[in-house]
Amino acid sequence: MENNTGYAKFGLRVGYVISAHIVIIFLNVIQIPLLTKGLGPDLYGIWALISVTIALIAPLAVLGLGNAVVRFLAGETDRDKVSEDFLSVLGAVFIAGLILMFLLLLSSDYLASIIFKNVNSSVYIKLASVLVILNSMRLITLVFYRTRMKMGLYTVLDLGWNVLQFGLMMAAVLLGYELTGVIVAVVASGAILFVVNLLIILRQVGFRLPHFSNIKAYLRWGLPLIPLYAIAWISSSSDRYIISYFLGATAAGIYNAAYLIAGCAIFILPPLGVVLFPTVTKAYNEGNINEAQSYLKYSLKYAMMITIPSAFGLTILAKPLLAILTRPEFVAGSIVVPFVAFASLLLVLCEISSYIIYISNRTQLILGLSGTSAVLSIILNVLLIPHLGIMGAAIAIFISYAVLTLLTLMISRRYLKFDLSLPFILKSTIASAVMVLCIWLFNPASLIEVLVSMLGGALIYFSVLLVIKGLSKSEITFFLNFAKENPRKVSMLK
Image (cartoon, rainbow, N blue to C red; front, side):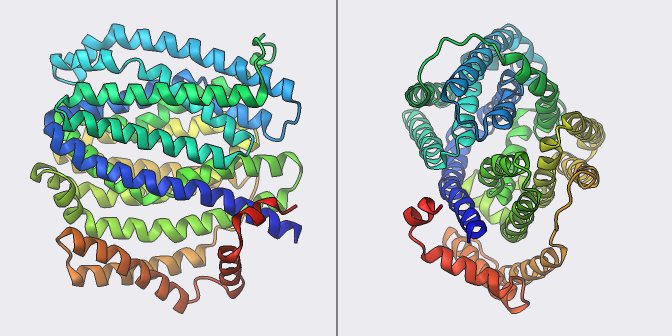
């Protein structure tokens, strides 16, 4: 009963975050036509390049301290220690963010002329530079709620920020402020969220002037991860830079729109990781190895249950989705969706397996694995993009993720093995293939037809999965019982 209660709590926390993340995905999907149609291919391409630039620099400013906070403060009950350590981390991240923001300001003209291929984009880069501090502070404050297992609060704040940002961006575009208005909207929403987060955290742990007494231990654990964030960015985002260099910002914008749609295949991974990593870390720290293995096994199984049909579905619906959501120029990006969607599928297995390496304190291995994938990604992009265009970038990301996943899986299983549920993955693939065949025969084109295909496809997939016994009776019973439970009662179980 105690173990089932633990799984129920875990499922409830994941459910909170997934529910919010579905809304966030919906907002992001609506944001695609808002920006592509409101800005056009050229300005949207510049915005895509600014976004991936900030996505590189902001995590670097975190100094690897996000995972360090989870590693050292998960389960910590001493309020004074939590206050001292977390506020010290917050101060260190702010200083790092300030330095990197000024470096971005100084290099904005160079980026605009050499990488963005548009000297006029310099003013946009300067305006967006403050996002380095705001995004890094947002990342580290949200880690606090993960560490303290306050997933309801995490969900509300993360969702609130996305809704506010979307609303301000929409207002900016509709009022005709174009890219300048979009950047100001993102900056304003980030500033508001940081203030709200800081007030809530100070209320919970109190204010203690940070003495940075334990920061060396955190930095010793986190600093080796700094190159990891840059390497991860190279694997997932540098292709936009290389596309821009060879083909121009417009091609980067077309690729980015398709990439965002394909990335919806793993919508379940970010919210799952938010809860899974601290949960597995806590179980491992307490010596509950079997419990850690169970969390890993079932998280992978149920993540694949959603991700596999999502990758198949987005592949068959790529062209009508791009036609509906964007301008006609962007439909050419549909050729990259299958490669990116299935690369994302591999990333689910890679990410969950990598948690084993983290909790085993083998972070240097993560660095080596990611570095290998990043170097391969750059080489393939440089070789393929000039000859195959944006499809070359898609092929490159699939191959680099496949290599990364295989190596991560092989190494992680040296330290802790868990059931990969391979028979289930095969059955899920079969059910997804049947679903795709039905959608292909239906041949959706309009928005209504696409929505009907999504709903009907989901029903077909789960029906076939049940027929071929992809889920056991005990699992079905658990899901049904869990769905009937009052969430407040579940969360109060001891």
